[in-house]
Length: 622
Image 1 (cartoon, one colour):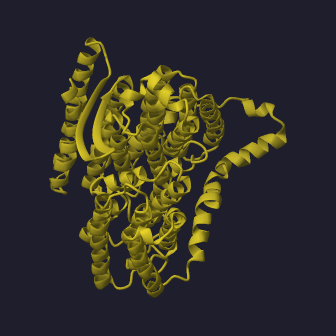
Image 2 (tube, rainbow, N blue to C red; image 1 turned 60 degrees about the vertical axis):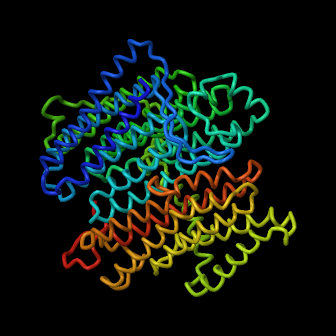
Protein backbone atom coordinates (compact mmCIF):
# COMPACT_ATOMS: atom_id res chain seq x y z
CA UNK A 1 0.00 0.00 0.00
CA UNK A 2 2.91 2.35 0.62
CA UNK A 3 3.72 2.66 -3.08
CA UNK A 4 0.27 4.13 -3.73
CA UNK A 5 1.24 7.29 -1.83
CA UNK A 6 3.71 8.13 -4.61
CA UNK A 7 0.94 7.50 -7.14
CA UNK A 8 -1.25 10.19 -5.57
CA UNK A 9 1.54 12.75 -5.98
CA UNK A 10 2.43 11.58 -9.48
CA UNK A 11 -1.08 12.00 -10.96
CA UNK A 12 -1.41 15.78 -10.32
CA UNK A 13 2.25 16.27 -11.29
CA UNK A 14 1.70 14.61 -14.70
CA UNK A 15 -1.59 16.48 -15.08
CA UNK A 16 0.12 19.83 -14.53
CA UNK A 17 3.10 19.12 -16.80
CA UNK A 18 0.93 17.90 -19.68
CA UNK A 19 -1.41 20.90 -19.32
CA UNK A 20 1.55 23.22 -19.98
CA UNK A 21 1.99 21.63 -23.44
CA UNK A 22 -1.63 21.90 -24.58
CA UNK A 23 -2.52 24.54 -27.23
CA UNK A 24 -3.74 27.77 -25.68
CA UNK A 25 -6.77 28.22 -27.95
CA UNK A 26 -8.21 24.72 -27.53
CA UNK A 27 -10.47 25.28 -24.51
CA UNK A 28 -12.18 21.89 -24.82
CA UNK A 29 -8.91 19.95 -24.69
CA UNK A 30 -7.57 21.98 -21.75
CA UNK A 31 -10.77 21.55 -19.74
CA UNK A 32 -11.13 17.84 -20.53
CA UNK A 33 -7.54 17.13 -19.55
CA UNK A 34 -8.12 18.91 -16.23
CA UNK A 35 -11.28 16.83 -15.63
CA UNK A 36 -9.44 13.61 -16.45
CA UNK A 37 -6.48 14.44 -14.19
CA UNK A 38 -8.56 15.39 -11.16
CA UNK A 39 -11.18 12.65 -11.72
CA UNK A 40 -8.50 9.96 -12.02
CA UNK A 41 -6.97 11.14 -8.77
CA UNK A 42 -10.35 11.33 -7.01
CA UNK A 43 -11.63 7.90 -8.10
CA UNK A 44 -8.34 6.09 -7.46
CA UNK A 45 -8.11 7.68 -4.02
CA UNK A 46 -11.64 6.63 -3.09
CA UNK A 47 -10.84 3.03 -4.05
CA UNK A 48 -7.64 3.22 -2.00
CA UNK A 49 -9.54 4.76 0.93
CA UNK A 50 -12.09 1.92 1.02
CA UNK A 51 -9.32 -0.69 0.94
CA UNK A 52 -7.41 1.18 3.69
CA UNK A 53 -10.49 1.30 5.93
CA UNK A 54 -11.19 -2.42 5.43
CA UNK A 55 -7.53 -3.23 6.12
CA UNK A 56 -7.70 -1.65 9.59
CA UNK A 57 -6.89 2.02 8.78
CA UNK A 58 -3.40 1.93 10.30
CA UNK A 59 -1.19 4.98 9.55
CA UNK A 60 1.20 4.50 6.61
CA UNK A 61 4.65 6.08 6.48
CA UNK A 62 6.85 5.97 3.38
CA UNK A 63 10.42 7.30 3.44
CA UNK A 64 11.05 8.05 -0.20
CA UNK A 65 13.92 9.79 -1.99
CA UNK A 66 16.97 11.13 -0.13
CA UNK A 67 17.84 14.39 -1.92
CA UNK A 68 20.92 15.35 0.10
CA UNK A 69 22.94 13.48 2.72
CA UNK A 70 25.97 14.51 4.79
CA UNK A 71 27.26 13.72 8.27
CA UNK A 72 24.54 14.85 10.66
CA UNK A 73 22.14 16.11 7.97
CA UNK A 74 19.66 14.35 5.73
CA UNK A 75 17.12 15.97 3.41
CA UNK A 76 14.61 13.37 2.28
CA UNK A 77 11.05 13.16 1.01
CA UNK A 78 8.64 11.39 3.31
CA UNK A 79 4.93 10.64 2.81
CA UNK A 80 2.41 9.88 5.53
CA UNK A 81 -1.22 8.78 5.44
CA UNK A 82 -3.67 8.73 8.34
CA UNK A 83 -7.21 9.88 9.06
CA UNK A 84 -6.24 13.58 8.80
CA UNK A 85 -4.77 13.03 5.33
CA UNK A 86 -7.77 10.91 4.35
CA UNK A 87 -10.28 13.66 5.19
CA UNK A 88 -8.25 16.41 3.53
CA UNK A 89 -7.65 14.45 0.31
CA UNK A 90 -11.27 13.30 0.10
CA UNK A 91 -12.60 16.86 0.50
CA UNK A 92 -9.89 18.36 -1.71
CA UNK A 93 -10.32 15.96 -4.62
CA UNK A 94 -14.11 16.24 -4.65
CA UNK A 95 -14.14 20.05 -4.45
CA UNK A 96 -11.38 20.49 -7.02
CA UNK A 97 -13.25 18.27 -9.47
CA UNK A 98 -16.49 20.23 -8.99
CA UNK A 99 -14.69 23.57 -9.40
CA UNK A 100 -12.96 22.30 -12.56
CA UNK A 101 -16.39 21.42 -14.02
CA UNK A 102 -17.79 24.80 -13.00
CA UNK A 103 -14.81 26.70 -14.43
CA UNK A 104 -15.23 25.23 -17.93
CA UNK A 105 -18.29 27.40 -18.49
CA UNK A 106 -17.39 30.26 -16.15
CA UNK A 107 -13.99 30.93 -17.77
CA UNK A 108 -15.20 30.39 -21.36
CA UNK A 109 -13.44 32.77 -23.80
CA UNK A 110 -11.36 34.36 -21.04
CA UNK A 111 -7.99 35.46 -22.37
CA UNK A 112 -6.22 33.50 -19.62
CA UNK A 113 -8.29 30.28 -19.88
CA UNK A 114 -5.25 28.00 -20.17
CA UNK A 115 -3.32 29.97 -17.55
CA UNK A 116 -6.21 29.52 -15.11
CA UNK A 117 -6.41 25.73 -15.50
CA UNK A 118 -2.61 25.42 -15.40
CA UNK A 119 -2.56 27.26 -12.08
CA UNK A 120 -5.44 25.20 -10.66
CA UNK A 121 -3.59 21.96 -11.47
CA UNK A 122 -0.40 23.46 -10.03
CA UNK A 123 -2.29 24.31 -6.84
CA UNK A 124 -3.73 20.79 -6.68
CA UNK A 125 -0.21 19.36 -6.92
CA UNK A 126 0.98 21.54 -4.02
CA UNK A 127 -2.11 20.71 -1.96
CA UNK A 128 -1.51 16.96 -2.28
CA UNK A 129 2.18 17.32 -1.40
CA UNK A 130 1.23 19.21 1.78
CA UNK A 131 -1.44 16.80 3.01
CA UNK A 132 0.56 13.66 2.13
CA UNK A 133 3.81 15.07 3.59
CA UNK A 134 5.49 12.93 6.23
CA UNK A 135 8.01 15.52 7.45
CA UNK A 136 8.39 19.29 7.49
CA UNK A 137 10.78 19.40 4.53
CA UNK A 138 8.33 17.61 2.23
CA UNK A 139 5.45 19.72 3.53
CA UNK A 140 7.41 22.90 2.80
CA UNK A 141 7.71 21.95 -0.89
CA UNK A 142 3.93 21.92 -1.25
CA UNK A 143 3.64 24.98 1.01
CA UNK A 144 5.77 27.03 -1.43
CA UNK A 145 3.78 25.78 -4.45
CA UNK A 146 0.55 26.89 -2.78
CA UNK A 147 2.00 30.33 -2.09
CA UNK A 148 3.01 31.12 -5.66
CA UNK A 149 -0.13 29.59 -7.21
CA UNK A 150 -2.19 31.74 -4.84
CA UNK A 151 -0.32 34.87 -6.00
CA UNK A 152 -0.88 33.97 -9.66
CA UNK A 153 -4.61 33.33 -9.22
CA UNK A 154 -5.29 36.53 -7.27
CA UNK A 155 -3.42 38.47 -9.97
CA UNK A 156 -5.23 36.53 -12.73
CA UNK A 157 -6.69 39.77 -14.10
CA UNK A 158 -3.17 41.11 -14.41
CA UNK A 159 -4.08 44.16 -16.46
CA UNK A 160 -5.93 45.68 -13.48
CA UNK A 161 -4.40 47.58 -10.61
CA UNK A 162 -6.26 46.21 -7.60
CA UNK A 163 -5.88 42.44 -8.21
CA UNK A 164 -2.12 42.86 -8.64
CA UNK A 165 -1.85 45.08 -5.56
CA UNK A 166 -3.81 42.60 -3.44
CA UNK A 167 -1.83 39.65 -4.79
CA UNK A 168 1.39 41.26 -3.52
CA UNK A 169 -0.31 41.98 -0.18
CA UNK A 170 -1.43 38.35 0.24
CA UNK A 171 2.01 37.07 -0.77
CA UNK A 172 3.55 39.23 1.97
CA UNK A 173 1.42 37.46 4.60
CA UNK A 174 2.22 34.08 3.09
CA UNK A 175 5.90 34.96 3.40
CA UNK A 176 5.45 35.32 7.17
CA UNK A 177 3.86 31.87 7.24
CA UNK A 178 6.81 30.49 5.25
CA UNK A 179 9.38 31.85 7.68
CA UNK A 180 7.39 30.60 10.69
CA UNK A 181 7.65 27.12 9.21
CA UNK A 182 11.37 27.57 8.46
CA UNK A 183 12.06 28.60 12.07
CA UNK A 184 10.09 25.58 13.33
CA UNK A 185 12.22 23.36 11.08
CA UNK A 186 15.40 25.08 12.31
CA UNK A 187 14.72 24.50 15.99
CA UNK A 188 13.38 20.98 15.31
CA UNK A 189 16.75 20.02 13.80
CA UNK A 190 18.46 21.08 17.04
CA UNK A 191 15.87 19.36 19.24
CA UNK A 192 15.76 16.01 17.44
CA UNK A 193 19.15 16.08 15.65
CA UNK A 194 17.36 14.68 12.60
CA UNK A 195 14.55 15.45 10.19
CA UNK A 196 11.71 14.32 12.42
CA UNK A 197 8.77 12.60 10.74
CA UNK A 198 5.13 13.06 11.70
CA UNK A 199 4.98 9.32 12.32
CA UNK A 200 7.57 9.68 15.11
CA UNK A 201 5.68 12.66 16.55
CA UNK A 202 2.87 10.27 17.52
CA UNK A 203 5.29 8.65 20.02
CA UNK A 204 4.40 10.42 23.28
CA UNK A 205 7.36 8.94 25.20
CA UNK A 206 9.84 10.22 22.60
CA UNK A 207 8.41 13.74 22.73
CA UNK A 208 8.32 13.76 26.54
CA UNK A 209 11.96 12.63 26.83
CA UNK A 210 13.16 15.39 24.48
CA UNK A 211 11.03 18.20 25.90
CA UNK A 212 11.70 17.36 29.52
CA UNK A 213 14.94 19.37 29.49
CA UNK A 214 14.06 21.66 26.55
CA UNK A 215 10.64 23.02 27.47
CA UNK A 216 11.35 26.50 26.06
CA UNK A 217 12.50 24.97 22.79
CA UNK A 218 9.19 23.08 22.62
CA UNK A 219 7.22 26.29 23.23
CA UNK A 220 9.20 28.11 20.52
CA UNK A 221 8.53 25.37 17.94
CA UNK A 222 4.83 25.24 18.86
CA UNK A 223 4.53 29.03 18.53
CA UNK A 224 6.19 28.94 15.11
CA UNK A 225 3.68 26.30 13.98
CA UNK A 226 0.92 28.52 15.30
CA UNK A 227 2.34 31.60 13.52
CA UNK A 228 2.38 29.74 10.20
CA UNK A 229 -1.14 28.46 10.81
CA UNK A 230 -2.76 31.80 11.70
CA UNK A 231 -1.08 33.58 8.78
CA UNK A 232 -2.21 30.87 6.33
CA UNK A 233 -5.73 30.65 7.77
CA UNK A 234 -6.24 34.44 8.10
CA UNK A 235 -6.63 34.49 11.88
CA UNK A 236 -6.00 37.63 13.95
CA UNK A 237 -4.09 39.84 13.29
CA UNK A 238 -3.73 38.65 9.68
CA UNK A 239 -7.45 38.40 8.87
CA UNK A 240 -7.65 41.34 6.46
CA UNK A 241 -5.89 39.56 3.58
CA UNK A 242 -8.63 37.00 2.90
CA UNK A 243 -11.29 39.40 1.46
CA UNK A 244 -8.55 41.04 -0.64
CA UNK A 245 -7.69 37.64 -2.08
CA UNK A 246 -11.19 37.47 -3.59
CA UNK A 247 -10.00 39.67 -6.49
CA UNK A 248 -9.32 36.50 -8.49
CA UNK A 249 -11.99 34.62 -10.48
CA UNK A 250 -14.86 33.19 -8.43
CA UNK A 251 -13.86 29.50 -8.97
CA UNK A 252 -10.35 30.16 -7.65
CA UNK A 253 -11.81 32.05 -4.69
CA UNK A 254 -13.99 29.03 -3.95
CA UNK A 255 -11.20 26.45 -4.09
CA UNK A 256 -8.53 28.58 -2.43
CA UNK A 257 -10.06 30.97 0.06
CA UNK A 258 -13.35 29.29 0.73
CA UNK A 259 -12.39 25.65 1.14
CA UNK A 260 -8.87 24.24 0.79
CA UNK A 261 -5.96 26.66 1.02
CA UNK A 262 -7.42 28.67 3.89
CA UNK A 263 -7.84 25.47 5.95
CA UNK A 264 -4.19 24.42 5.66
CA UNK A 265 -3.40 26.34 8.84
CA UNK A 266 -5.86 23.99 10.53
CA UNK A 267 -4.00 21.07 8.93
CA UNK A 268 -0.67 22.27 10.39
CA UNK A 269 -2.16 22.47 13.88
CA UNK A 270 -3.80 19.03 13.58
CA UNK A 271 -0.59 17.47 12.26
CA UNK A 272 1.61 19.05 14.97
CA UNK A 273 -0.93 18.51 17.80
CA UNK A 274 0.89 15.48 19.32
CA UNK A 275 3.94 17.72 19.77
CA UNK A 276 2.27 20.52 21.77
CA UNK A 277 -0.75 18.77 23.31
CA UNK A 278 0.88 18.78 26.77
CA UNK A 279 1.92 22.46 26.58
CA UNK A 280 -1.00 24.05 28.42
CA UNK A 281 0.09 27.66 27.84
CA UNK A 282 0.23 27.11 24.08
CA UNK A 283 -3.22 25.48 24.03
CA UNK A 284 -4.71 28.37 26.03
CA UNK A 285 -3.15 30.91 23.64
CA UNK A 286 -4.49 29.08 20.56
CA UNK A 287 -7.96 28.83 22.10
CA UNK A 288 -8.13 32.50 23.17
CA UNK A 289 -6.93 33.81 19.80
CA UNK A 290 -9.37 31.50 18.00
CA UNK A 291 -12.23 32.84 20.14
CA UNK A 292 -11.24 36.49 19.53
CA UNK A 293 -11.01 35.83 15.80
CA UNK A 294 -14.42 34.16 15.74
CA UNK A 295 -16.10 37.06 17.60
CA UNK A 296 -14.47 39.89 15.63
CA UNK A 297 -14.80 38.21 12.21
CA UNK A 298 -18.50 37.48 12.87
CA UNK A 299 -19.13 41.16 13.58
CA UNK A 300 -17.26 42.26 10.45
CA UNK A 301 -19.13 39.73 8.28
CA UNK A 302 -22.50 41.07 9.44
CA UNK A 303 -21.86 44.58 8.04
CA UNK A 304 -20.14 43.75 4.73
CA UNK A 305 -21.81 44.98 1.54
CA UNK A 306 -19.89 42.58 -0.75
CA UNK A 307 -21.07 38.98 -0.88
CA UNK A 308 -17.51 37.67 -1.23
CA UNK A 309 -16.36 39.66 1.81
CA UNK A 310 -19.27 38.31 3.84
CA UNK A 311 -18.32 34.76 2.95
CA UNK A 312 -14.62 35.43 3.62
CA UNK A 313 -15.15 36.77 7.14
CA UNK A 314 -17.74 34.08 7.92
CA UNK A 315 -15.16 31.46 6.95
CA UNK A 316 -12.52 33.17 9.14
CA UNK A 317 -14.93 33.01 12.10
CA UNK A 318 -15.59 29.29 11.58
CA UNK A 319 -11.86 28.58 11.31
CA UNK A 320 -11.40 30.42 14.61
CA UNK A 321 -13.85 27.95 16.16
CA UNK A 322 -11.93 25.05 14.59
CA UNK A 323 -8.75 26.33 16.27
CA UNK A 324 -10.63 26.26 19.60
CA UNK A 325 -11.66 22.64 18.94
CA UNK A 326 -8.06 21.65 18.17
CA UNK A 327 -6.79 23.40 21.31
CA UNK A 328 -9.42 21.52 23.33
CA UNK A 329 -8.21 18.22 21.87
CA UNK A 330 -11.30 17.53 19.77
CA UNK A 331 -9.46 16.54 16.60
CA UNK A 332 -12.30 14.45 15.13
CA UNK A 333 -14.79 17.30 15.58
CA UNK A 334 -12.31 19.70 13.97
CA UNK A 335 -12.05 17.43 10.89
CA UNK A 336 -15.84 17.23 10.54
CA UNK A 337 -16.08 21.00 11.02
CA UNK A 338 -13.40 21.54 8.35
CA UNK A 339 -15.25 19.38 5.82
CA UNK A 340 -18.59 21.07 6.50
CA UNK A 341 -17.15 24.57 6.32
CA UNK A 342 -15.23 23.79 3.12
CA UNK A 343 -18.30 22.43 1.30
CA UNK A 344 -20.52 25.27 2.51
CA UNK A 345 -18.11 28.09 1.53
CA UNK A 346 -17.43 26.53 -1.86
CA UNK A 347 -21.16 26.34 -2.54
CA UNK A 348 -21.73 29.93 -1.37
CA UNK A 349 -18.94 31.32 -3.53
CA UNK A 350 -19.98 29.38 -6.62
CA UNK A 351 -23.58 30.63 -6.41
CA UNK A 352 -22.53 34.19 -5.46
CA UNK A 353 -22.56 35.40 -9.11
CA UNK A 354 -26.14 34.15 -9.39
CA UNK A 355 -27.08 35.90 -6.15
CA UNK A 356 -25.68 39.16 -7.48
CA UNK A 357 -26.77 38.89 -11.13
CA UNK A 358 -30.06 37.01 -11.06
CA UNK A 359 -31.37 37.79 -7.56
CA UNK A 360 -31.68 34.08 -6.80
CA UNK A 361 -32.53 35.00 -3.20
CA UNK A 362 -35.76 36.73 -4.20
CA UNK A 363 -36.67 33.98 -6.66
CA UNK A 364 -36.61 31.14 -4.17
CA UNK A 365 -37.47 32.64 -0.81
CA UNK A 366 -38.38 35.87 0.88
CA UNK A 367 -35.73 36.99 3.31
CA UNK A 368 -37.10 38.53 6.49
CA UNK A 369 -34.52 40.05 8.84
CA UNK A 370 -34.94 39.49 12.56
CA UNK A 371 -36.72 42.29 14.36
CA UNK A 372 -34.18 42.15 17.19
CA UNK A 373 -30.58 40.93 17.34
CA UNK A 374 -28.08 40.44 20.15
CA UNK A 375 -26.61 43.89 19.50
CA UNK A 376 -29.91 45.54 20.46
CA UNK A 377 -29.29 44.56 24.09
CA UNK A 378 -26.11 46.68 24.17
CA UNK A 379 -26.05 50.38 25.13
CA UNK A 380 -26.41 52.67 22.10
CA UNK A 381 -22.86 54.00 22.37
CA UNK A 382 -21.45 50.47 22.36
CA UNK A 383 -23.69 49.52 19.39
CA UNK A 384 -22.41 52.45 17.33
CA UNK A 385 -18.80 51.83 18.37
CA UNK A 386 -18.94 48.17 17.38
CA UNK A 387 -20.69 49.05 14.11
CA UNK A 388 -18.01 51.58 13.11
CA UNK A 389 -15.21 49.19 14.13
CA UNK A 390 -16.72 46.40 12.06
CA UNK A 391 -17.30 48.71 9.08
CA UNK A 392 -13.60 49.61 9.27
CA UNK A 393 -12.74 45.90 9.75
CA UNK A 394 -11.23 46.79 13.14
CA UNK A 395 -8.47 48.65 11.25
CA UNK A 396 -6.66 45.35 10.72
CA UNK A 397 -5.19 46.55 7.42
CA UNK A 398 -3.92 49.75 9.03
CA UNK A 399 -2.54 47.71 11.93
CA UNK A 400 -0.46 45.57 9.57
CA UNK A 401 0.86 48.60 7.73
CA UNK A 402 1.60 50.62 10.86
CA UNK A 403 3.36 47.95 12.89
CA UNK A 404 4.80 45.65 10.23
CA UNK A 405 5.38 47.12 6.78
CA UNK A 406 5.82 50.84 7.57
CA UNK A 407 8.73 50.17 9.99
CA UNK A 408 10.37 48.08 7.25
CA UNK A 409 9.89 50.90 4.73
CA UNK A 410 11.21 53.42 7.28
CA UNK A 411 14.36 51.36 7.79
CA UNK A 412 14.77 51.04 4.04
CA UNK A 413 14.49 54.79 3.58
CA UNK A 414 17.29 55.27 6.11
CA UNK A 415 19.69 53.55 3.70
CA UNK A 416 18.41 55.53 0.72
CA UNK A 417 21.84 57.15 0.40
CA UNK A 418 23.12 53.91 -1.16
CA UNK A 419 23.58 54.26 -4.91
CA UNK A 420 24.87 51.72 -7.41
CA UNK A 421 28.37 53.20 -7.20
CA UNK A 422 28.41 53.20 -3.40
CA UNK A 423 27.05 49.65 -3.26
CA UNK A 424 29.80 48.39 -5.55
CA UNK A 425 32.46 50.59 -3.91
CA UNK A 426 31.72 49.44 -0.35
CA UNK A 427 30.04 46.03 -0.36
CA UNK A 428 32.26 44.30 -2.90
CA UNK A 429 35.57 45.12 -1.08
CA UNK A 430 33.90 44.33 2.27
CA UNK A 431 32.77 40.96 0.92
CA UNK A 432 36.30 40.18 -0.30
CA UNK A 433 37.63 40.98 3.19
CA UNK A 434 34.97 38.71 4.69
CA UNK A 435 35.97 35.85 2.37
CA UNK A 436 39.61 36.34 3.36
CA UNK A 437 38.69 36.08 7.05
CA UNK A 438 36.67 32.90 6.43
CA UNK A 439 39.71 31.21 4.93
CA UNK A 440 42.03 32.65 7.63
CA UNK A 441 40.06 32.36 10.86
CA UNK A 442 43.27 32.01 12.86
CA UNK A 443 44.00 35.72 12.23
CA UNK A 444 41.03 36.88 14.33
CA UNK A 445 40.07 36.20 17.93
CA UNK A 446 37.25 33.88 18.97
CA UNK A 447 35.11 36.83 20.14
CA UNK A 448 35.38 38.45 16.72
CA UNK A 449 34.44 35.16 15.05
CA UNK A 450 31.25 35.06 17.13
CA UNK A 451 30.41 38.69 16.28
CA UNK A 452 31.06 38.58 12.52
CA UNK A 453 28.00 36.43 11.63
CA UNK A 454 25.75 39.08 13.22
CA UNK A 455 27.59 41.90 11.42
CA UNK A 456 27.44 40.22 8.03
CA UNK A 457 23.79 39.20 8.45
CA UNK A 458 22.98 42.85 9.27
CA UNK A 459 24.71 43.92 6.05
CA UNK A 460 22.55 41.36 4.22
CA UNK A 461 19.48 42.90 5.85
CA UNK A 462 20.57 46.39 4.77
CA UNK A 463 20.91 45.18 1.17
CA UNK A 464 17.43 43.69 1.06
CA UNK A 465 15.87 46.70 2.84
CA UNK A 466 17.34 48.98 0.19
CA UNK A 467 16.04 46.63 -2.52
CA UNK A 468 12.55 46.63 -0.99
CA UNK A 469 12.31 50.45 -0.97
CA UNK A 470 14.12 51.12 -4.27
CA UNK A 471 11.88 53.16 -6.56
CA UNK A 472 14.07 53.87 -9.56
CA UNK A 473 16.45 51.21 -10.82
CA UNK A 474 14.95 47.73 -11.15
CA UNK A 475 18.29 46.14 -11.99
CA UNK A 476 19.92 47.62 -8.89
CA UNK A 477 17.05 46.29 -6.74
CA UNK A 478 17.56 42.85 -8.30
CA UNK A 479 21.33 42.93 -7.68
CA UNK A 480 20.80 43.87 -4.01
CA UNK A 481 18.46 40.88 -3.56
CA UNK A 482 21.14 38.54 -4.94
CA UNK A 483 23.82 40.20 -2.79
CA UNK A 484 21.65 39.59 0.28
CA UNK A 485 21.96 35.83 -0.24
CA UNK A 486 25.73 36.04 -0.67
CA UNK A 487 26.07 37.98 2.60
CA UNK A 488 23.90 35.44 4.44
CA UNK A 489 26.07 32.61 3.13
CA UNK A 490 29.15 34.51 4.31
CA UNK A 491 27.64 35.07 7.77
CA UNK A 492 26.85 31.38 8.28
CA UNK A 493 30.30 30.37 6.95
CA UNK A 494 31.87 31.37 10.28
CA UNK A 495 29.93 28.65 12.09
CA UNK A 496 31.90 25.45 12.43
CA UNK A 497 30.96 22.33 10.44
CA UNK A 498 29.55 24.47 7.63
CA UNK A 499 31.31 23.00 4.61
CA UNK A 500 31.86 24.83 1.37
CA UNK A 501 29.81 22.14 -0.38
CA UNK A 502 26.80 23.43 1.55
CA UNK A 503 27.59 26.99 0.45
CA UNK A 504 27.87 25.92 -3.17
CA UNK A 505 24.48 24.17 -3.02
CA UNK A 506 22.89 27.30 -1.56
CA UNK A 507 24.53 29.83 -3.88
CA UNK A 508 24.45 27.79 -7.10
CA UNK A 509 20.72 28.35 -7.56
CA UNK A 510 21.02 31.99 -6.47
CA UNK A 511 23.84 32.67 -8.95
CA UNK A 512 22.03 31.13 -11.93
CA UNK A 513 18.77 32.88 -11.01
CA UNK A 514 20.59 36.19 -10.54
CA UNK A 515 22.24 36.06 -13.96
CA UNK A 516 19.07 34.82 -15.64
CA UNK A 517 16.94 37.56 -14.05
CA UNK A 518 19.45 40.33 -14.78
CA UNK A 519 19.60 39.35 -18.47
CA UNK A 520 15.78 39.35 -18.66
CA UNK A 521 15.65 42.86 -17.17
CA UNK A 522 18.43 44.03 -19.48
CA UNK A 523 16.57 42.71 -22.51
CA UNK A 524 13.40 44.49 -21.40
CA UNK A 525 15.28 47.78 -20.96
CA UNK A 526 16.62 47.49 -24.51
CA UNK A 527 13.08 46.96 -25.84
CA UNK A 528 11.10 49.38 -23.66
CA UNK A 529 13.61 51.91 -22.36
CA UNK A 530 13.83 52.82 -18.69
CA UNK A 531 11.79 50.68 -16.27
CA UNK A 532 11.43 52.14 -12.81
CA UNK A 533 9.65 50.66 -9.79
CA UNK A 534 7.44 53.68 -9.13
CA UNK A 535 4.43 52.25 -11.00
CA UNK A 536 3.03 49.13 -12.61
CA UNK A 537 4.17 48.74 -16.21
CA UNK A 538 2.22 45.67 -17.35
CA UNK A 539 4.90 44.46 -19.77
CA UNK A 540 3.70 40.83 -19.61
CA UNK A 541 1.09 41.79 -22.22
CA UNK A 542 3.66 42.63 -24.92
CA UNK A 543 6.56 40.49 -23.65
CA UNK A 544 5.08 37.26 -22.22
CA UNK A 545 8.24 35.21 -22.83
CA UNK A 546 10.44 37.65 -20.91
CA UNK A 547 7.82 37.77 -18.14
CA UNK A 548 7.82 33.96 -17.86
CA UNK A 549 11.62 33.80 -17.87
CA UNK A 550 11.87 36.45 -15.16
CA UNK A 551 9.18 34.74 -13.06
CA UNK A 552 11.20 31.50 -13.14
CA UNK A 553 14.30 33.47 -12.05
CA UNK A 554 12.25 35.04 -9.22
CA UNK A 555 11.06 31.64 -8.02
CA UNK A 556 14.59 30.23 -8.02
CA UNK A 557 15.90 33.27 -6.12
CA UNK A 558 13.20 32.96 -3.43
CA UNK A 559 14.07 29.33 -2.73
CA UNK A 560 11.22 27.75 -4.67
CA UNK A 561 11.71 23.95 -5.09
CA UNK A 562 13.01 24.22 -8.65
CA UNK A 563 16.63 24.99 -7.73
CA UNK A 564 19.27 23.80 -5.20
CA UNK A 565 18.55 26.95 -3.17
CA UNK A 566 15.49 25.24 -1.72
CA UNK A 567 17.69 22.65 0.01
CA UNK A 568 20.30 25.36 0.61
CA UNK A 569 17.95 27.45 2.75
CA UNK A 570 17.29 24.48 5.01
CA UNK A 571 21.05 23.85 5.14
CA UNK A 572 21.63 27.48 6.13
CA UNK A 573 19.26 27.23 9.09
CA UNK A 574 20.51 23.80 10.13
CA UNK A 575 23.97 25.36 10.67
CA UNK A 576 22.69 28.26 12.80
CA UNK A 577 23.31 27.20 16.38
CA UNK A 578 20.58 26.80 18.95
CA UNK A 579 21.95 29.75 20.97
CA UNK A 580 22.15 32.06 17.91
CA UNK A 581 18.54 33.23 18.08
CA UNK A 582 19.44 36.79 16.97
CA UNK A 583 21.21 35.45 13.88
CA UNK A 584 18.22 33.21 13.09
CA UNK A 585 15.77 36.11 13.45
CA UNK A 586 17.85 38.47 11.27
CA UNK A 587 18.20 35.77 8.62
CA UNK A 588 14.46 35.07 8.77
CA UNK A 589 13.66 38.77 8.40
CA UNK A 590 16.01 38.91 5.41
CA UNK A 591 14.18 36.01 3.78
CA UNK A 592 10.78 37.64 4.38
CA UNK A 593 11.80 40.98 2.86
CA UNK A 594 13.81 39.22 0.16
CA UNK A 595 10.71 37.41 -1.12
CA UNK A 596 8.66 40.62 -0.98
CA UNK A 597 11.31 42.62 -2.84
CA UNK A 598 11.52 39.99 -5.58
CA UNK A 599 7.78 39.63 -6.08
CA UNK A 600 7.47 43.43 -6.00
CA UNK A 601 9.98 43.75 -8.85
CA UNK A 602 8.06 41.19 -10.91
CA UNK A 603 4.66 42.75 -10.18
CA UNK A 604 5.76 46.33 -10.87
CA UNK A 605 7.42 45.53 -14.17
CA UNK A 606 5.22 42.85 -15.69
CA UNK A 607 1.76 43.18 -14.09
CA UNK A 608 -0.87 45.90 -13.82
CA UNK A 609 -2.20 48.32 -16.46
CA UNK A 610 0.16 48.71 -19.40
CA UNK A 611 2.19 51.91 -19.06
CA UNK A 612 2.02 52.65 -22.80
CA UNK A 613 -1.66 51.89 -23.34
CA UNK A 614 -3.47 54.36 -25.60
CA UNK A 615 -6.78 53.59 -23.90
CA UNK A 616 -8.15 55.21 -20.79
CA UNK A 617 -8.52 52.89 -17.82
CA UNK A 618 -9.39 53.21 -14.16
CA UNK A 619 -6.20 53.31 -12.10
CA UNK A 620 -7.81 51.44 -9.21
CA UNK A 621 -10.02 49.09 -11.17
CA UNK A 622 -11.40 45.94 -9.57
